[in-house]
Amino acid sequence: MITFYVLVVGLIILALGFIFYPLFKRNYAAHTQAFTLSNTRLIKQRLVELDEEFAQGIISDKHRTQAQKDLKIALLEETTPEPDGATLDAVNGADTKRHTGMLASGLLIVLLLSTGVMYWYVNQVSGISGLYQAQADMQSLTDKIIVNPSQDVTLEDVQSFTLAIRSRIEHNEEDATGWMLLGRLYGALNQFEQAYQAFDKSLAIAPNNAETLNSYAQALMMPNQVEYLKQAVVVLRRLLALEPGNNQAALMLSMTAGQLGDLATSEQYFAQIKDLLPPNNPAIVQIQARIDELKGQSQAMTGFSVTISADNEISTRLAQSNRLQPTFLFVFAKDGASDNPLPAAVKKLNLGALPTTVTLTHADAMMATYSLKDLTEVTLTARLSFDENVQTSVGELEGSVTLSKVTDAVIPVSITINKEIKQ
Image 1 (cartoon, rainbow, N blue to C red):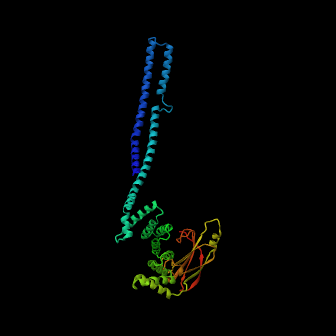
Image 2 (cartoon, rainbow, N blue to C red):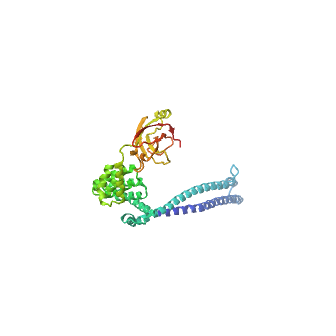
Image 3 (cartoon, rainbow, N blue to C red):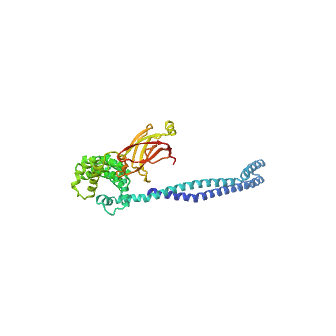
């Protein structure tokens, strides 16, 4: 707040400067003009006095003549106008006006900048006030959200608690519990990447914290994406190595392994927990159904063996070494019978020489519940990308083909890269 008051005082001083500086310059100019007029009257009076002194015999005619000459030169200098016809007072007035204008413009710019700074600062006051309030409410929010979770927890409560935790971590980056709580809060806000980063930092400080490992695994399971489910399996195995009797972790691992199609792991940990819960428990029913499904499934793969090449024009471009080259190859499959933008399978590889062959099967699914087995018509696309983002960018190269899937078979397909993405 001290900074705020300093800014206010500074702006008041600037405003007063706009008022009093022109008045000061005007008075100074008037004083200069009055001085010049007074000096001229004195010279003329002295000329009269010289005539009187000569008449009285006080001075000689020679002395009177020389003195008059000197005084007349001085009088001429006081009253002679400038070569352009303007008087000295006019020039001084113009200079004063010009300098005043320049100074006023400078002060105005400074005033505007200062006002902008103060406006920005005032806008931060509400944020700072919110931070102080969140810190003051931290204990009550901890009880409401963490210790005894309440049904009336609001989004504002979670956001305030997140703000308080971040403030706490800023003063102690080695606070493993703070990072763990922050990971939970980001997960509650569906900000999963930030949540995973927070959990990683917590585990870097306290690698064997079972509570953090458990929360991390839960957050990894929430998006239901294959990439994150695989990481969840690693975290849960780590947790069960520390606590083999952790039945909650065994339940989560059995469920996650089943989603990934890992029948052996799902059955292993299902055996640990199935007798601890009623047979009609939703989790038990879900896991048992998935195990039965995996047991009844054919182990044959469903997918495509994709041979990727480029047409002559693009092959020539790729051979040039003095231009930006694509560095990644994406091969993905989408539903050819609908506009569903979600890939049923995708692979990302470092781009080597073309042609090349890539095998894409239902095991390359992004979602545990959506794969090539769920499609009839499939659009296969091969894209040469400048970065690791599967989203299209201008200048990237691709080719595609649409065909029917054959269940429990990997069929050969050829794709030619023949198109540049324009927008």
